Structures are given as structure tokens and as C-alpha cells.
Image (tube, rainbow, N blue to C red; front, side, top):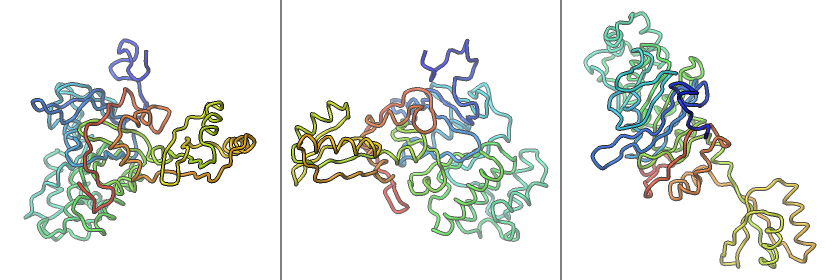
Length: 356
């Protein structure tokens, strides 16, 4: 049997996967009529780090977070959080998960500390944690201000402070830097990374902005049209590259590559064309060039290129089927189950000013 999906008689209620995973989902579906907002999602979120849920607006990011929090019910599929199965009948102990979904909620006429105290009272927790939580999010010096007088960045930080009152093990933040100015974006981003680094909290951050996720999260899940296109490290996605050979005799060069069992394809261009190979070790490419020259093939140019992260994501969104192998356990963080392809070509923001 494929290790990705284990027999519950052998593995128990939780499927096979990394023992330190904070969140696992298998075949998670949320359907509204004929529309699938989340379509067969297999998430694997490592514990004690920042995980980026990246995708265009309407991709299903917020719906996924609401499913994890129990704010909406799954049509089908399974979820495990912090080692426990969660569904309509099984919920985590209150306070283990904090969240900020679709903007912060607070009483504008109350100060930041008073809002946090009300949250502590609601959760039946001591108010003594309020000063330290406000210190963590950088609001200690604004205790006398009412929340309605806060800047947008301060309001976001207040929302995160209220989510931290219970000292959660897992924090879900939906577009926490959306709409902030450059300075506030940096402040919120650094605060999120510090929470993970200093307190060991697992943080899932959703965003449609590639550059923001790149600076925060070493592990990402790319989602579009409700489907997971890629899951793993950003480095694994970025490091894919290729080598272009421009030669005097492409047919003889191609025959040599076939003989050496090196994958290749012919790409015509205005100067004739190139043979494109996968990235090879220096020693092997050196031996290949020597072999081509020995067979009378003049090598005019050898160009090694690696895609930028932006190029990798755009190619992933436009041609998802060609990247299914990028999600396998041999690349990046392991995930269980096959990764379904995406439909369409959704808009994608690669920088703060891009399309949403």
C-alpha cells in the first residue's frame, strides 16, 4: 500500500505522516451547491514554524482556515490538528488554536488592553497575561488609546494579541498584511516570525502576495481553484533549472543525448534553436561537451539557467500538471496523497502591487 494513505487498522485514526505535523488534512472538500471552494485538499503543516498558504483571491484560502477552525463544516474529507482528529463531533480544547480571519474584531470604543481583557474573560482565562501579550505585539506603549484611534497596522496587531491571549499552540492568520503600508507590513511580518521562533507557535499565514510569503515561510502550500498545486519548501521550487545547448548539429547532439539517456527537448528560436536539458552536475556536463566535440559537434554556447521564484509560481499556476512531481515526498516537505491539478489561470500577485 502507498505510504501516503495508511490503513487505519495498522496506523490508527491518524494517517501516516510526519510525527511533528501540526495540521493534516486528507481529501478535504467544501462544496456550495455545484461549486467546490475547497477541492480534495491534502495539507501537511510542520509544527513549530511558519507555513504559507499562498494563492490568488478566491483560491479557497479563507475557506480552508474556516474549515480548520470549525467555522464551517466540510462536505467530505478528514482533518487532524495538534495530533487530534477534528470534525463536527470532535473539537480541540478551547484555547489551543488562535486565529485572525478576514480582519480583526474588537470594540472600537475600548482600549487595546480592555479588548484583550474582555477576550480573557470570555475564555475564562486570567487577565494577568494581557500585559505580556501586548508587549509581544508591540502595543504596550499605546494602552491609553482607544482601538478606533489605532492605525491599520496597530489594529492588525491588536487582533493578533487577542488571538494570543490563550497562549495557543497553533495560530491561523488570514491575509494579516493585507492593506498595510510598507512599515506596518514589516512590523507584522517580523512579529509573526518572532512568535514562531521564540515561542514555538505553529503559524499558518495565508496571502496572495508571493513576496510576503517568501520572507516569512520556508514551507508553503500553493492553492488555486480550491486545489493544492504544490506543497513543500520554496527552495525546492526555486532550485529547478535547466541547461541550454546551442550546437552546430542538433540531430547528432540529440542522438548523443539519447545514447547517454539524458532527457532533452528541442526549442526553436530566432537563432535556430537550442537543446534544453535538465540541470546536470558540472562533471557530467563537462564530459558530455567533450563527447559532443569528439563526435564533431561544435558547441557554441552552454547556458545554465534557474528560474526565479516568480517564474516558478507563474509556471505552476499556468501548467500545474507538469509540477505534480514537485509535491512528492522526495522534494520539499513530504505530503500524503496525490496533488490534483488546477483549473484555469487565476490571477496571482508576485509583489505587493500585483494582481489579487
